[in-house]
Image (cartoon, rainbow, N blue to C red):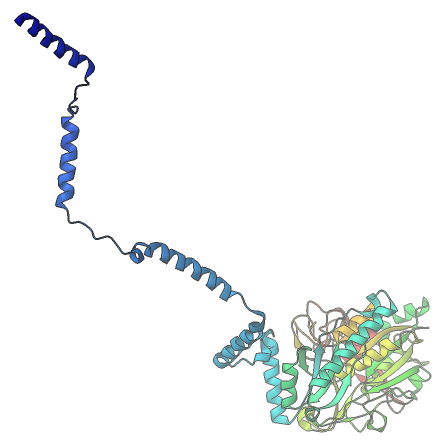
Length: 490
């Protein structure tokens, strides 16, 4: 019995072992457990950080967002708003004006032009007025290069409109003696100091210069240049016309009898300087018969034009001018100057304004369809120019003439410069002429006259020393100067 009970107990134990899952103990990982324990201990030993408020936690992202918004805002503010552009420009101009004394109307103008305005204003303040030639913002091409008559008319309308616009902006009380030009974008007038400032403020004005005045710059000389040989070959000037822009021509002189085919006068009466017109009736201009006659010989220099015309086209049995069979267009461009300070000595004297020279050249251009005009002779000059002076207001009208085959021949001047020419001979599209000796005096034949201006850009040389030619009243006289050389070329 006891054996049976013991056997039953053994079976019960075996059965429980077969059907009951014994509880397993955790695997033994002594190294990992030790590392974890030490980390936990270290963490417990450190002071715990208090959690940051949400506003602090987000500060970095908020700051970055703020920077991004500011960048966008700055970019928008940097863009000029249409309504602010003009005020910004004016504010900047005002700021610079306060610090640099630069008038707002001078912005965009060259320093040279600003200085010219300042000088003209000072001169007008001192003298009461000043004569100026003003360049206008209007398109220009020499008319001979324009493709159609309609294009010519359109250009002339543009010039007239620009002149009208300028005059509309000028105070009527500050201007006088206005000269308009038909074919070139200029206008000449006398203005006071306020008038100068009005011109300075006008957007129509592109240039301005003082309308300065300048003085007048053959028996042996004509053979020297080979004229008799040319005559024998049939080149005597027949059928050609020379325009003489000078002090007028004595058309009754035997040397010039029947040669003057057209006349004109452009002359100025003004207060600063004190001048009087030589035109009939004291007018500013005239194209009537007799308007090209020489001014009174009681005024020094009034014999100059007749002498020049004789050199160019005079003719007699004894001797003749260069183109002895050519005709003359006599254009009087001088004015009477009444103050000795303007004459450089004894008054009265003759001088010519640039604006009257321009009008004279425009008259030549207008006559091109009526006469076969070879050249325009200008035996005048003043100043010193070591290079071309193509900003001179005469250049556009000289270019007009050149574009239709008419040369403008100008004296180089009589100051004896070796590297400079006078004005307007310094204009690149003009033909400048210096003087040589013809052997009649002390000078050696074909050497440059001691008084003649020369430069590397001088066009030609011709005899100009002691040249015999006609003078008003039927007489002859010997003159010398580049004024006498020029008509040898014209």
